[in-house]
Length: 556
Image 1 (tube, rainbow, N blue to C red):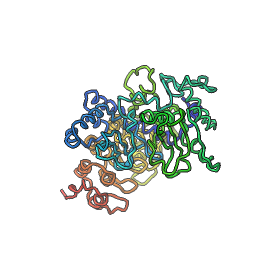
Image 2 (cartoon, rainbow, N blue to C red):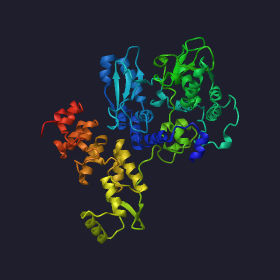
Image 3 (cartoon, rainbow, N blue to C red):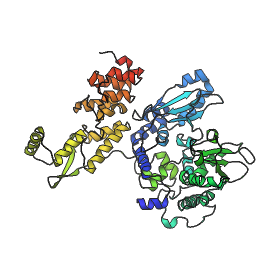
């Protein structure tokens, strides 16, 4: 689907950087091998193995829970863990603000509560944005005060509720703008007028189209809302702008708030309504409140009262999931979704010929390079970038380079790949980006697959980092021997004067990774790296508060 049509069908799509960041997250955060390995463990009843395959560290044991909280609590927890899909949880966790696709330290979510005043199951993000992309599953006496409540969002991580994901898109039986088999609707199939209550998906499409045309009040009315604007006419503009900017998909907001109300039996007619706040506690003038389950049948949308954000039932439930946006923009296909998401959103889609999920890395193909007025084709072979030049030309180029002469064409490309300085052809930039994105997300099998295909491991990214600078994110046991055998410098510096050892220390690499770098010969002295050039290994450990690395301070 081209971008023009995508805009016509899903006109309130987020800005391109937001979509592109989510596209990267969908491609690299949960690779296909992770989904397959985690599913294999789940089918065997091994929930702990499923978590390990999805890079989720479990920081409790069921025996310990039984001793501390009782057998009944341990049994309830065990039942939840048998249905936990850790790779699906990883899939749905939000991104940090900005054009970033990594997991960060602000991720704190409550997944389940066990009795009034009982323990809570939480998932926590990595301690550092650029650190290992691992999650922590913990059981604590009380939730972190900054943790978001996902106890009512089991569809995001529990295989008993995955079928509810279709409701998050505002449709029934199919998601808006798509048939149930995943094929997009044609423009002629879209509603041209009020479709009536008989087709919820068409009504959702009509609401979204009205919103794009600027009829904000009509869009929310079509989604089942009653608008109660502020009494002060001077505040009306900010109120309507908030609805327009923050709630581009009124049917999604309506579906989620109705689900909240359904989960609260006391919130029936005449009872206390469920309140969800859309917006930010720091910008009350652009914050609105939705009420459900009160006196009226329709959802009430009104300005938020002071302080209401903090007492809201679910202040972030209005946030949409990105999969429908990505599909409509043509940035992913239905078969590139997580298998459970694919089956939930497209219940009539035929079974795929093979496995589904984010695509594996493709073998890097040949690239055309402009060289001394001609087009040459370079390709990867045995870990080097092979160029179509004779041995005599290679020797002449090496001599010219030794004398400080300027290189051209194919030889410039070879040098740029290994130094990170200069501009690569578009195809090679794309291949380098694929390699480093997989490394940055901890996709060790993906990185090794590219190296096995012949890609040169001596690549440097735009910050001058080598793959050794990202070793702390990957499985060092598999990657380090491969890189050392290829001749990478264990004390290589990036543009910030950091070595792989200093990066592993400051970006929360594991003690085993740091130990492996030291055993590989990484320098402990003033040459260990750092922006000021004086940070010894011991200084970095103490400056970073890495108490877990203090046993490594003693000189072997």
